[in-house]
Image: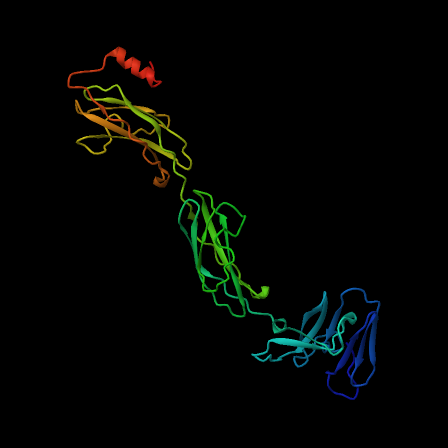
Length: 352
């Protein structure tokens, strides 16, 4: 920076800035004086081009002389810092800033013109954040994420950034299926590879060519919970010790997975009656229940049985077990002998 020529009443002047291997020379093109020389330049340098903004007393100049400083990278970390007078209007169709006679450490000819995107001339107005972000449960591992676009303003759109996190976690991540969303018209994606029976929240932002124009992230979505992994079906279901009106039903309860156990559901079926819960096998709410006596059955009738593990969340309930082989009750007034009963109980591992 320098004093203005005494022959001019204006604070504006032209300067030549020449960058050489070991020095920078500033020269006033109006012929007033050589202004200053900087020595011993090593590595990338910064050059400031433009008018001073001080009134000589360390105070900022009047609005007429105020300027906005910015910079463009010329090459390999060397920058030209330039300014525009306050109120300068950049044409709406301008795309590049041209820098003339830049000779950074002798790397380019004096006559070469270096250009930089016009984006360097202003601070862009960021895009508005997306809104109405919502997650919809699709499966045990998938949630569909939707949103509404915000106004882009000065953003040159590059991609949507969708991020998710388990509701009790602060570790945000880009979920599978929501990467590389480079189409501005896209307003949904399916986040996959998630944990089962887990609530997730999502947020969305617009990524622009210039990071200053990126939108803030949206408000967080309401939690969406992936479906639970159901309990495994009971196994080793069998019917034993038929009498004229009852039968012993046994089974094994298997892994519950995401199931919060509610009860074991035992159902019977005969040739004349569809599936029903027999007397004696209702309200089996103990997890360690593994048998019941189906009562009030019809004499001389064949029955099959099945068992289902029920959970507080119906989506976690198991599929019904395989159906047992048909077994008939005895004729009326006939009961199983005590020795035979003991033998059958011993065969199924329930000996007394």
